Image (cartoon, rainbow, N blue to C red; front, side, top):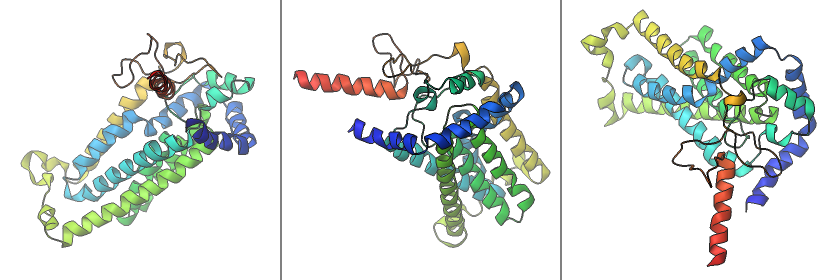
Length: 308
C-alpha cells in the first residue's frame, strides 16, 4: 500500500517540478541574515509551540461574553485544520520534504544550509504551518469583520501570507505545499467561523444552550479589569507572550545542534529525529523521524508475520 500512495507525492513533484524550483530560486536569490530572522519570526505563527497554546487561550476566551465567538471560531478552526492536514491529507499524499528529494540540486542545498537547515519530522504536503496560520487568520478576520472592525481584520491574512512565504524561504516546503496549506487553512477557518456562528445562535436562542448565555468571567470581581481597554491589553499581552515562547527557541534551531534522522537509503534524511519520545523510541540505538520510524516498524512487523 505504501508505494502506491507514494506516487501521489511523486506525481506532484513531477508535475510542478519547474514551478517549485523557480520559486525556490527566487527566495534563494534574496536570502540574507535579516530576511532569515524575519522568516523565522513569521514561521512561528504556524508552529506547534504557538498554535497549541493558542487553542488553550481560545478555550479561555469562550468564558468571556465579549470574546466567546472568537474563542469558538479559533478552536473549531484549529481542530478542523489539524484533522484535515495531519489525519487526512499528509498520510494520503506522502510527499517527502524538499531537502531530502532535491539533494542533487546544489544551489538549493546551499540555500537550505544558508537558511539555517531547519527541518520537520513528517511529510511535506500540505504545509502544516501555512494551514495553521491561515485557519487562525481566516477565523479571526471574519470575526473582526463581522464586528465592523475591518481595519484590524486585514492584519491577520497579511501575517498568514508572510508565514506561507517564510516556509519556502527557509527551504522546508515546496511552493505547492504552502498553496495546499493556504487552501486547507482557509477552509478550516471558514468551518471554524460558521460553527462559531452556530454555537452563538444556539446559546442565544435554543434551550438548554441558553443557560450559557450569561456565563461571563468578566463579571467576577477579580477579573473586572478584563473589560474595555484592559481586556484588549491582556489579550495582546498573552498573544505576544505565546509568540515569544515559540520564536525565541527557533533562533537556535537547525544547524549542527539538530538531531537528524538516522535513515540513509535513497537519500540522507535531514528530517528532525524524534528524541526522548515515548511514541517513537530509538530503534537499535538510533533515532528516526516519524516517516522512517513508521517504515522500519512496518518492515519489522511484516518480517515477523512472514517468520510465523
